[in-house]
Length: 439
Image (cartoon, rainbow, N blue to C red; front, side):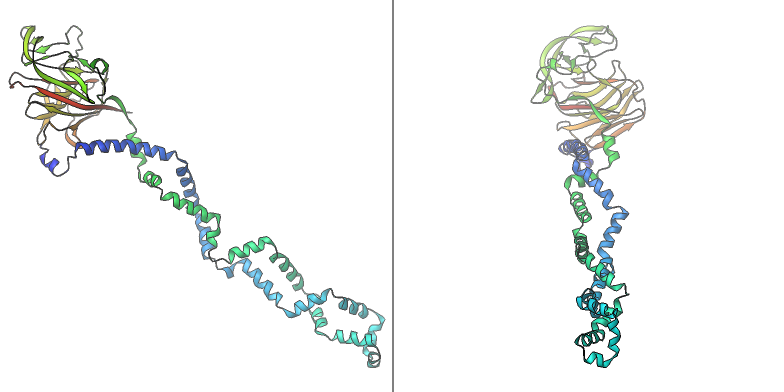
C-alpha cells in the first residue's frame, strides 16, 4: 500500500493528532461517567420528565392562554360588583337591621296599624304621619322587594369570599397577564432550561451511550511507557523465547552480521526505549542450520527482547509508537515460541516497511510505501477471533482472515543486519507500547 497520497490528502493523520485523539477518547469516557453521576444531570433528567410531560404542558398552556374574564375568580368579582352597585339591594341591606324598620314592623303588627287608613287619624298624629311616610318610602319598597330574595345572602357570601386572603391571592394571580411566570412550574422549567445548556450536560447528551459502553469494554492489559531506569526493572527479557526448554535463548545466527547482546544494547532514555545496533566486536553462539550452534565473531552487536515470561495475550489491540534509524532490520512482532505463527506489527528491512502474518504457508502481508521509518508513527494490530487488521496511525493498511493465530503470543522487539546488507549502526526508538483486551 502506498501511503504517500493518503498522507498528502490528510487521510493518514499525524501521530500528534492520533495521540491527542487517544487522550481525548480517554477524557471523553471519564467525563461522560463523571457527568452521569453528577447531581446536575440527575436533576436535569428528573425535570425533563416533569417538564415534558403532557400534564405539565397542558397546565402551562392553560395558564398562558386562559382569559381572565373566563375564570371563576373574574365571575365572582363581576357578580360582587354587580350586586354592590344594585342600589335597591344596597338600600335593603342598609335598612335590613335598622331601628326604623324594626319600629315600623312592630307598628305594622299592632292594632294601631289600621289607623293609617283614616286620614283624620293620620293628620292628628305625628307617629302615624311617620309610619305612613315610611310605608310609602323607597327604603321600605326595597325591603319588600328583597325580603324573600336570595340576593342579599348571595351578596353577603360574596363580600365574605372576596375579603379572604385566598381569594385575594387567586384574584391577583388570574388577573396578572404574566401569571405563568409566578408559578413553581415556571421556576422548574427555567431551571430545566438552564441545566439544558450547561456544557457538561450538552456534552453528555451528544454522546452515544452504546459507543461509550463499547469503548469501556477495552482494558489495558500491558502498558510500557518506557519510564523504567534499569533493563532488569522492565517487563522485558533479553534473548529468544522457545517452547522447548532445551534450546538456548542467548544466541545469534550465522547468516546475520550482529551478535545479540543479552539486553546490554537496550535501555530507557528520557522516557524512550532505545535498542541500539552498535559497531563493536563480540563473540556469540550462532545457529547454523547445518552445523548447529557454533561460536562466531561479529563486528556489530544488537538486541532482541521479549515478554514471553511476563506477558502473553490472545486477541486484542496491540499498539506501538516507534521510529528507527539506520538501513538495517528493525521489528516489533508477536511470537509464539515456535518459528510460526509470528505476526509482524512493524518490520523495516532497510528499504521498506512491511506488516503481516508469517505462517507455515508463507507471508501474508503488505509493503507500506510512501512513509519513512524515521518519524514516529503509531503501528497497531487489531486481532480478533477471525481477522487480523493493521493500522498506521488512524489508517487501516491491511487485513486478512487467513491463518489467524489461535494461541497466546508475546511481544518482541529486535534489530539485526542480514548477510546481504551493508552493515551499519542503527536505533529502534520506542516511545510506548500499549496492549488492550476486550471483555
